[in-house]
Length: 99
Image 1: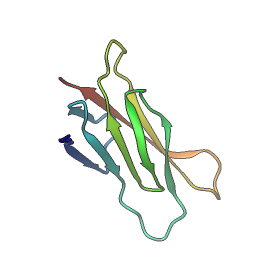
Image 2: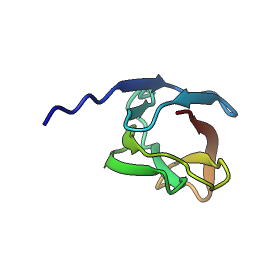
Image 3: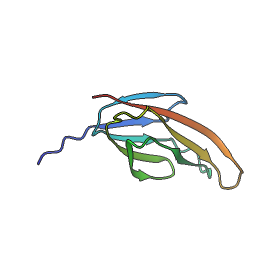
């Protein structure tokens, strides 16, 4: 059996960015590390058609499935610091699945 998985990399997405991607694609989202700070990124919300493969402090990867009949939702990533209350930054990345 042959598997042809495409790879799509998004580095430091801006708030409101939109990505057009095909089902079966491996989506990677990476954030630049800013010095030796304590900030960490985490997934706050994700559409059900993005299946997490890896979640680290600044790097995330997902396998993209067909969105089907569900409404397109944003992948919400937030940056926080353990020594400060609340969130520092929020990035919403809309992943539009095309066929």
